Amino acid sequence: MANWLSEKLKIDPANLYMYEILATPAPGIRTRYFDMSDYCKIAFLFVVDTMAAAALVVATAIEATSNAGAGAAAIATATCTITANTNVQCATIVLTTVLVADTITINGVLFTAAAAPVLANQIFDQSGADAADTASLAAAINHAAAQALFVAAGGAVTAAVLAGSTITLTMTEPGLGSLTVVSGAGTMVVATVNAIGYIEVEDTALAAGFDHIALQLVGAATSHAAIIAVRGEPRYAAVTQAVAASDTDA
Image (tube, rainbow, N blue to C red; front, side, top):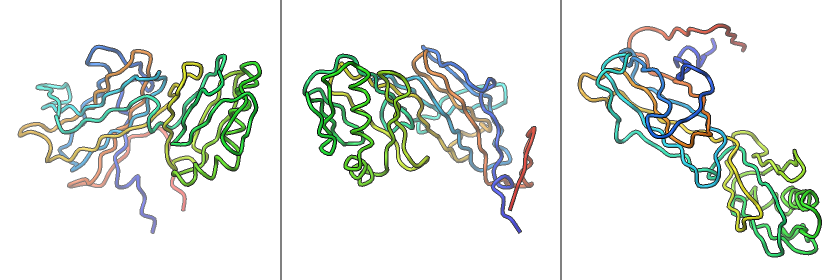
């Protein structure tokens, strides 16, 4: 007999609109309040996009006494922060008039611009136009020598040139590792395409009389977020999903 995750975890869209834009100042995006009366744990899973260097998105769990948010208060111990270009799922690098000795570091692997490439040593060519420089950096990233370093650091990285002077970086194996990208020069601008985070809360973290919980995200107004609520360890009855379509296949 199959032991389905969908029989153990209650899955719900948390934000009213699936892909909401963050706003500053607070409160930013705040999800609906989920009833914890029948569950011991809840996890909010969120995906955030469009983060320029140094941008932050701060996530905080909010408790309340009703689904309308009565008495809403932050749970001080339930918070985390996404920092742009740090442990993200997808990032871009835009090259503009790269100079000799300019550098960029991807998951601890240093790439250096030079007048002539030595791809095996993570040295790429900056002597051409921006598009040519971009192609050379992508080739250096995808080179077997760099890939061996990436694998040693946690996972292979794929560089794709999707526009003339823009490289898109992803982890080659989805879910294996993440990307931290640091530019050593203003000629190579890094941005986060998307990053994921989660906050998990046990019902014991709620104050007396509080039985509902939401998630709040605050960050750069250019970022968007999609949020899913997953409740687990039901106390009394089996989990019943409220979905428009479903299938299980063993």
